[in-house]
Amino acid sequence: MGQLVWQLQMVERAVAETGVALFDGYRGMGIDKAEAKLAKRRRETLGRRIQRIRNRLSLSEETAGQLRDLVKERNWFIHESHREHGSDIRPGRSVAMLMNRLDRLSKLTNQVLAGLREAFGAHVLAHGIDLREVEEEARRKLSS
Image (cartoon, helix red, strand yellow):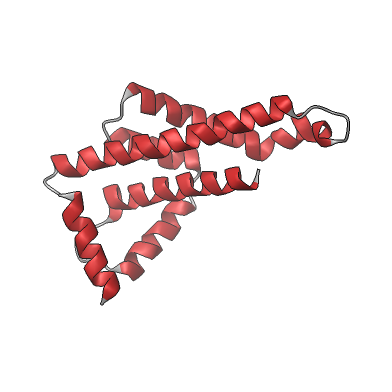
């Protein structure tokens, strides 16, 4: 469960960072301004953040469906999983149903991250930005 929480945090951060890049970012903005904008994006709900980026990125139907499923399953995990399965962790009880659902959610987080990476990469390329140049510029700035 702890690993899954971290995976969900990675997705939430990736979604927030994508929102900053799509709506708030500009060349030369600087790390401090980017972090402030990221903090603002992170105060929005995951569903709201995803809706905003879905409207801007060209997502495959598969990725769009995975994003919808992720919000639903993430909300279940955070708000309902203990109520539904809390007693399953007692000795002599089966945790198989809970573990299967958590495993599916874990796989879904990985699929969503890959889908977002692909869609964002296509978006920046369509706008004339080479991600390799962005990564190289970031490395130069971070190393100086």
